Length: 369
Image (cartoon, rainbow, N blue to C red):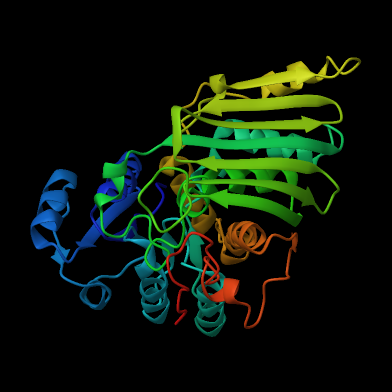
């Protein structure tokens, strides 16, 4: 028997929503886009026509009132993620939220409270976890076949011109949450944590080198893990030669991927340590020549989990761990001290805002609300 059709909605029909819709179309007839929402009706109508969606709504409440949904995709600017996810939970609809899940840790904790009350999950888009090579690497690492995780490098070296920030919500703490640490490099260091495990301490720097933003355009961090592994994480929007690079050095092998906005299995290299050459065949046998890592991989995994009655990823606990690293990077950079996992809690300013009201280049001290 064929799998039942999942009915989904999309809130926000800007650029990233197209990636969602294209992936959903690839999963048809298993998945149907039941309706879309956008404040800009003309944009919503154009989007609906392109992707064959029959119903357009002016607001999320109308979508939830009119449609039976199995999942709603939240593809709006970051400042709206939390209120829309809460609205979805109250309507009994699981949500898949574009990164970052929320503007700050306080908002993530608010989501967790509502999730506990309603039993309705909030998921986050971290699609690079779900590419074939990353899943294979994680399986080998978890099985202990590669030995201890030792050293990693994680680089998101991208380029965004000044004009990129003409969009009103970009480059602002109160609307986007942060710079490349929050909005760009987060995909790479999320994959780092998925492979190497939970981080424990961070020592970081952040700077505004060139761009006309309130936020940083570069950050660098030294990271310790609970398993005693060490890593460097670099996030940049001022690097003309763009690349995304992750290197994992285990006791018995080095594994590296270099790509830009998505990888294939061919983008990975595997180097066994002397005496462990047999691992090269173990690595090769688990790969395929599949498509570029992207939303399709994560969406397929989500619907597979729902079909099997399992909890899909990436759940709120995992997303918070990744977002906490971003907060710790900013707190360490702006306070000039090392930050431990779990240290940012309660009324700490970096729980309520990624800037912590402590941005050294800010013209006046920020007022947190």
